[in-house]
Image (cartoon, rainbow, N blue to C red; front, top):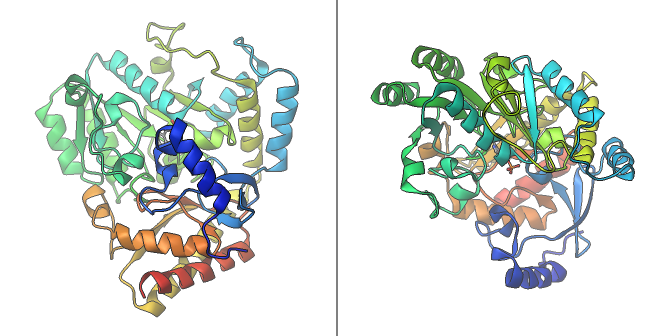
Length: 433
Ligand SMILES: *Cc1c(COP(=O)(O)O)cnc(C)c1O
């Protein structure tokens, strides 16, 4: 299946791409900078597998970076897309399905009383921060080092994901004024958050976070952290915003907020609710959402927002969640993967750790536990790169960076998990040889 030789067609395409597309890719981490070599150019996907343009098959744990909860090309989602597309690709006018999707989201996530659809996670977080500022009349936002909230200016301060992978602490092009309005705390450090709130009285509009972080590798919230943030927000008159673009409809039907039992004021979604089509959403308390134009004065708009094809794919995805066994199965597969990998780690006597919540996981090349960005940054990224390449040769495709979450989908059955565990065992031996 994989002969260990890098794909000739992928390499040729990458060379062409680099002439006309910055870095040869349309989103930075795809370029394999952190692991070396040319990225795979993907020809197609089915279930847990992708095939590259050189005809090689891989078990895929990227899943388009989170959306593909049921694997690639799920027949129900593809049918929904076909059917919607046949009636027209976009109208820029209201359609019935948008109402149904909004109703579904509100029914699945109790904190969401109203919701606005946009085209990406970035758009959702950008808008939600504007809304928090509009509602509170305050300028600052408080975020956490290593969390990623898309590429809007205010968030590119100590961000996770590709920003962390490429070691770009702050992006040029973000004005000092914008940077000054972004306060940064360490994840899981309640005392640090409290100190910042005390130092900036009545200036913080919202605390925004990934309730379970995927974008510095998988980092769960410590006991009491989310509840503590809820309390601090209430004390200081700031809004609590959960960025559930990655965790929404993935960790539970109601997202991380259901799993941990904490109710944010506002939330953002993306990824899973589009079934692999471009979509995003922000929503929450009715009194806040009624400030959004044209209901209220906070302006936010979109030519393609609520796109009929994206909405149809999202509805098909949410329909698939009605099967009550989905999250139990994802947890079981995630656990089997964790148990298998950890037994290899013990067999080889390695000082590395796997962190996981449900179907999201990261193998950190360090003893751990990883609880914030300073501890995540201690990972041996050179060793990760060797492991990544050794695993790719064995037909398993992980996120090409230490600082990303990997995703198990409902299409990763027991046999696929067992094949993955065996490949990881071999790749670890090679990486530590
Ligand atoms: C992916 C992601 C975003 C950005 O979404 P895009 O659709 O890539 O713009 C925002 N927040 C989190 C937590 C994400 O994982």
